[in-house]
Image (cartoon, rainbow, N blue to C red; front, side):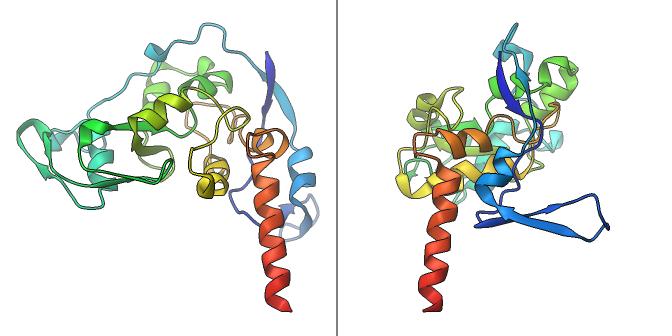
Length: 227
């Protein structure tokens, strides 16, 4: 059992966050990023009973008529140079950019589709109590831009089911983006909107508090710009 966020942090890498208070509907209180994260209420997570098979993937995707699995639909969408789509949605050629390790990939077979918030994290954060259909919807979700991302197989398998408290992409320049993206909205089928992500990124991530570091960096840049 471990703590998890009940509310995710909005995915804006700003030095301050505007949080709506209980007084007039349009009123907002501006607080520092670290303080906002520290104020997020906690619940407990449990991985009891977790198995990847509880999240059916890959299904027939957003358009069952196209003959492509959700995996191939993501690959087609994210291609820098589109592949030729052959019979049974075989992908021929194409080029992809794996942002985790800043690598150009020229074969679909060299790519994995990463669940930005890992299946195990979704399970921990409430998907264990959802129906099989809801978990399948998360595992194949293309409705949110950051839910699924095409990256090199080696970087995805290095990540496994770790959150930012334990893993960051090999490319240091993308740590800010990586730490913030899952907080933009939680996976369908969970009871949280940013399971264990923002707090781990701020408090004890490998990048020594990625969101806080990013916010501080932006703050310094702004001040330099005003001189």
